[in-house]
Image 1 (tube, rainbow, N blue to C red):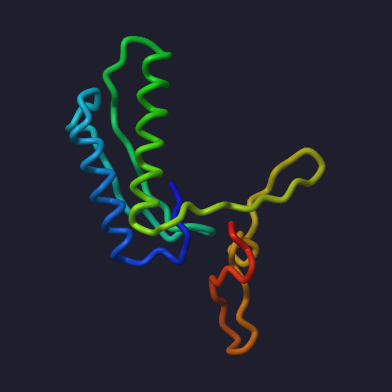
Image 2: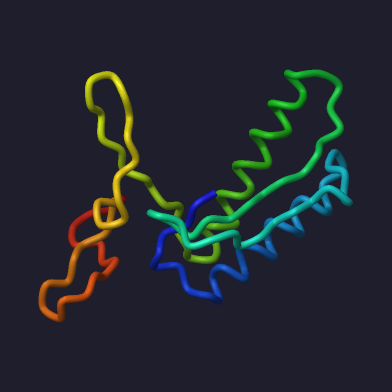
Length: 125
């Protein structure tokens, strides 16, 4: 999962703790397999690793559990005030290419100081 670069350290801690608690308390998740970590400063997002094994009867049951957990993770992110990152891509001749950081949704160069900033000037992505 990727969070926007505007995410504060406090929000990141809350997301990590909330998602960990969600997975560790879920009756269909194998608790020892749960991994929720701030992984890296990605090209367009603050990358979070979310990993867990589920106990499911079949593929359909697995997809139902996964879908509900993903919705609950979205709610955790929203509750903290953080936002999911949107990675922009370029389509050229039938191939998608990820954009460089300065082409990420919400990333605007700050030409006043010669530094780059991550302000979303009119961009809600």
